Image (tube, rainbow, N blue to C red; front, side, top):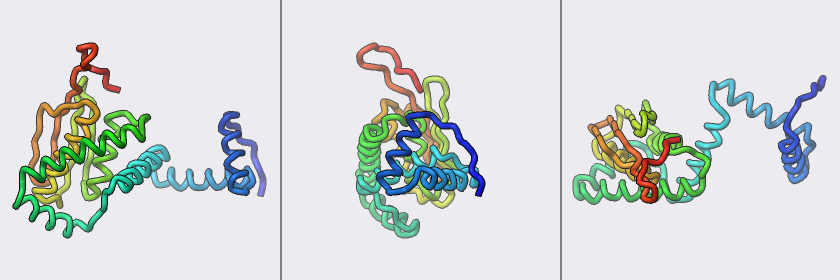
Length: 201
């Protein structure tokens, strides 16, 4: 098969060369494997960056003890716990969200707060039909819709989202939570040192 010349940055070529040697592959074989996988991603109208970030979030959630369960099992179990101890359940959601947020922010420092929050909610709430985190001046608007969510799961997920946001310096200033619908308005709290709001990036 005919070969064509592809231009690449010198530092990337050096990294690929090292990786090929470590895997006992040729540079030609490794580059073609990378390109084939990248093309598969783009043919699905996905972004390679989103897939990598999503994998990193999922891997870290797994390492933190997050266990995916079938919807019916998760909702029934949570409904029972929520009915017995509603306050303790939502408080746990807030604490878990704040802990997850702090750990993931430390492990994935290049992700901006809106992207981090959106990706965590999206990966945790698999059954959501819509997850959006939008910037509006110094605020973040969070919208999560899940028609199949139970009432208790919706409330727990909302509190987890608020906990993640809190870990990144955002406070909830407005919330609407009903079965299957989460709408949150978050505002970054003022910096303790400068007295001015931190810039939203």
